[in-house]
Length: 239
Image 1: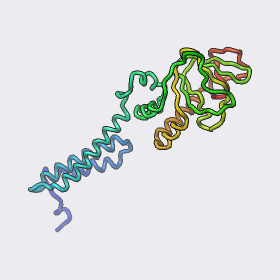
Image 2: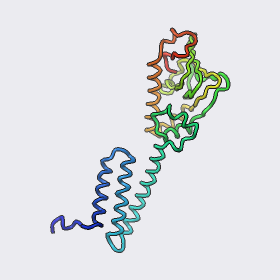
Image 3: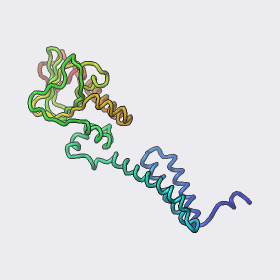
């Protein structure tokens, strides 16, 4: 017999060919959600084929492939939750636009380790020359930066302690928040443990910190040439 004589025909046989087509497309997809959706569709078509192709249905194949489809469906739900901002709290929604390198799911993981605070008095975040045990993000309020005898006052969002976080070096300036400022704080060791376990989150955090550093460098002037208070300036050295 010719090879083609072994191939089935009719509506039931069409299910397996269609399932094969979806699985083939799945192997070419680079996006995880598209890949999982195509593979799930292929699995459902295979399940229909196993049920209709014989009497009684092929229950062993139905059960095993049904379990695989269920696991895939659960993973699709996880990916959708990772990409959706629906589960962000009201406070997190206000902060999330400043973390545009993170997916909503990655941002939620980051926020679980964060301590959201409001400065009730002058609050020192770093001390020049001292080790830095925390990474901070100023959401709003005035940031006072002292380097030697020079002082700069800023009113913008941004990280504090990111250079120390990246390099392990001591703080390059003393940074104090004025009363009323809102800020986030992470324990450096806790954050490093998290990014060790989550490479994609680590990449997002590194990208966010590098963008913050680039903005500071691009908008900075030598701090020694700044007046004592410059609401529009920025320090030459990130802190």
